[in-house]
Length: 119
Image (cartoon, rainbow, N blue to C red; front, top):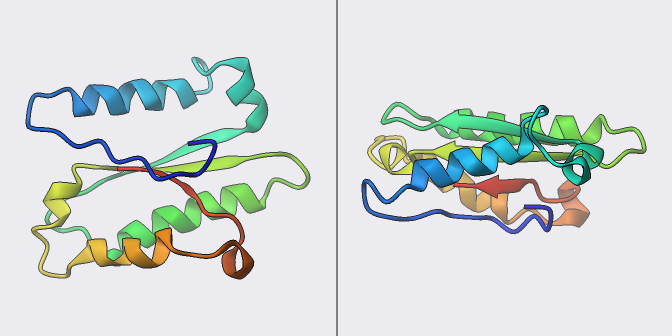
């Protein structure tokens, strides 16, 4: 996550994907995160996907994370986007996951550093 490499957790129902996500989220919670992460100023921007998810919903979470990072004013801050139950968004007739192509392929020279992402 610190390296901003997208992380995708895939598995069958009951294979503890949600538990893995919760462990990762707990590592970034202000009361439970290690001092190293606390100094870096990590913050989680979760989104629970559903069949009603739109591309704008997903893009909004990435923009929120980017605003958090841009407000750093000389300190290191990382916004981490968590998309949970992405498979439900695949059922949306609006095809909201296509926005991920744009969001994950942004070049640093165009839009600043890429946002960390866990799906």
